[in-house]
Image (cartoon, rainbow, N blue to C red; front, side, top):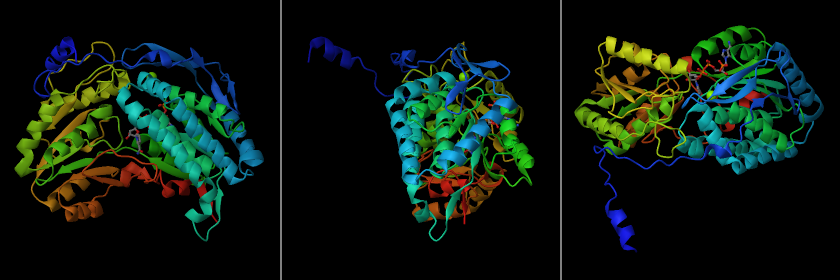
Length: 496
Ligand code: NAP
Ligand code: MG
């Protein structure tokens, strides 16, 4: 080892969370993104101009720069896409042997893997999430979903023994902005595996990876009309939901829009799944591995800026370890790197839109006005773009709005508890029921909680872990129906 090298090594800072570590910038290059200046609608296997000729802009929330102009689909465009999907369903896709269908789905998975780096950069540019997340979570999981459901396509009779599974027809699918490519994969992969065709509408602020997916689907040689991507705003989604020739609607988004859709579909006979909001409880017992739990809590609410439907936005700590947990949490928050989503050091990226940032800032004011004590780390945040410091609220109570309502930002409300019964009651005291986390050394306690918590997913001694094999979905106002796993096939089938 050269002298110079050994000197450099000595100068390296030690890992002390209280010291202000400065990492050298490690930006991923945006040059791979290859974003076109303008995107049209992907209908019937071709790029089609919107009937009204309207386009909207999509920006990077990290620096407010224009990334591209994207077609605004109106009712006529949606109608064209649904007609293409219907024809493809009747003439091609429903008649194709299942093992042939599987090959196309498998090919999509492979091309996602080949273009993983490009997709990760585009996801971070368009949505603001840290590149580490899009690279290690969003894109690999999206590919895995296609791989997993490719495997089911020709084995449906084994999934439902004694029954005759049949596709529904045309699925209208609407997705939000927090996991754009992954949500598209969750929707499209099971629909195709079960023999349905698709019209998908991505969120207005994050259309780009869905459009890249359209390119991938095209390159995979899928027959025209099997998957159609119509970009646009809320009205585009509404036109899709209300189209008379849709057999099934799959929606992921807010509880508010979910309720509108449920009302619109009542009595139509269209099948519906809703994946809606959440207000998950993370529960730390005194016997938990505290450092591991603190890391899990940080991961559950601050990474990806709290833009996660299952974000652990409420923390319940057993009273005997509360001071210790809060001290460690604050220390860990001081070490979080907030900033450029494309920098590999970044833990907390940009808030997805100016509108969402405003909503989060309003909740910070509400929290303070309700009498809770607010803590934010001393880090600075970029002056341009939409950023929010990770935030803790102490001394909160069950009636506080910051405890009851979904904020969808990096904001954690902490309460303490003494007994198991007390914490179950508190954790369940919410209109939502999507997910929860339990941190304890006792297996029996984990089982008590998993059976008594009204939450679709309960993680034990870990948080925010996903796999295509395990079903995901909620209770109460978090929606109904499951995505992922064998359960995720059911919403796209009739069982004769
Ligand atoms: P959102 O406002 O409900 O939007 C979701 C999607 O619906 C977007 O594509 C949106 O288009 C579209 N839309 C808006 N109004 C519509 C209407 N009247 N009819 C049909 N479609 C309409 O939700 P968001 O703010 O984008 O996403 C955040 C929410 O999603 C949070 O509540 C979060 O908890 C939830 N979420 C749930 C899950 C889950 O699995 N349970 C997963 C992720 C996110 P525009 O983008 O153009 O407005
Ligand atoms: Mg954007």
